[in-house]
Every structure is written in C-alpha cells, then in structure tokens.
Image (cartoon, rainbow, N blue to C red; front, side, top):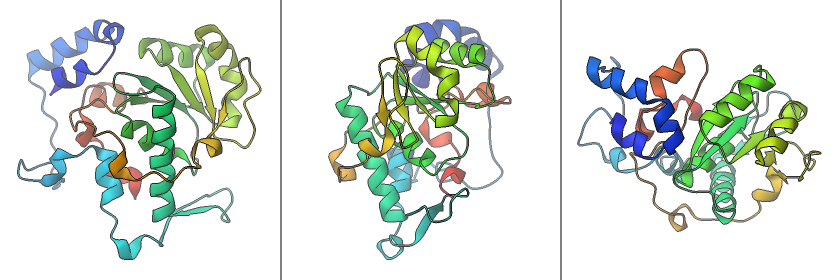
Length: 240
C-alpha cells in the first residue's frame, strides 16, 4: 500500500520521505478503525473508484436539489448537491486543460471556505494530489511544504495572498484565488469562479486509479498518518 502510493509522488518527495517508508514497512504498521468503512471489505464496489468519484456518484437523483453546503460567513451562499457536483467536475476539467494531472501536486491554503470541497476534490479528479496547508503557517513553513511536495501551483484564500506572494514569485507557481478578484501578485493568476463555468459530466473525465496518491496533509500529526495512504483511506467526513 505504501509503495503503491509512493509511486505517484515526485522523486524528490520519495527521497526526502524514504525514512518513513522504511520505518512503516519494518514495523508492519496497520491502522484499523473499529467502525465499518466502505473500503473495509474486498467485495465492496467502492474499492474500484477514486474518492471524489465515489462521493459524487453516491447522491441519489432525488436528493440532487437538496442543500449540500452553506457558507457560514454568508448564509445566502449555498451549493445544492447538483451544483456541487457541477462545480467540482468543472474545476477538474479546467485543471486538466492547464496541464495538471497524475504525478502533480497542488497546494491548498485556506480557512473554511464554501469552495474548499470543489478545490480539494477537483484536484483529486484530475489524478493529481493536493497538499493542504494550515493557514496559520508562516511564510517559511508554507514554502517548506510547497518545496518538499514539489507543488506546481497553489489554490489560496484571499486572506493568504499577501503571505504567499513572495513564494509564488520565487518558485514560479500558478495561483488560483478563492476570492472574487484576480490575485494582485506578479504573474497574475486565476479566480476560481472563472474555472467553474463549463458543465462537465463526471464520465467525461479521465479515470483515476483508486490507488493514486490524493493528498499530502502536514498538520497536527496527520502527516505521518496519511502521507502515503491511497485514496480510499481518507475520511468521508469532508462530504458530511
């Protein structure tokens, strides 16, 4: 499991994290929940799908118009399940057009935001991996995480743009802002709303292996727990 997930990471990342690979294999680490999970049985059909695909396919047609997400800072902003599916597949298609795909890593630096699900799972639908960054990190900590994961770009909340501007300039990263204005940084960037205009069917997107590396979290101990875990081991609570 660990070696398969490592295969999707960059060479520099694999070299830097080799000590984790060796330690995990030598100690025969097993993480098991006492609760039944969709992936806990080899007979589960969910094992053949990536996590974003599984989540977006499990909403029954009768529930598509139900509210899925509400912006806690502005309750007038909300997504129904059908709108959430449309925004996520559209995000994936836009990233694919930008050349993002399997083997790439995209940083996500944001507090809670109504488009976080879209950004996170939109990246996952391309076959690329996200690396989620704590918005309280310093500039030095953010740059370290982007460097060690070999990130190509970053999706960032407007409140964090000033902090990442020097990093973007230095590392020549593309930027996608979760706000309503084009990022005021060297080289400009994209607004997420401009990447969510097309209606894209889930079936039209490339098939992503369920063993692909999906995310590289660093915060509060989760780095050791989830860095090399395949796509199905991520909690479904992101969708609840």
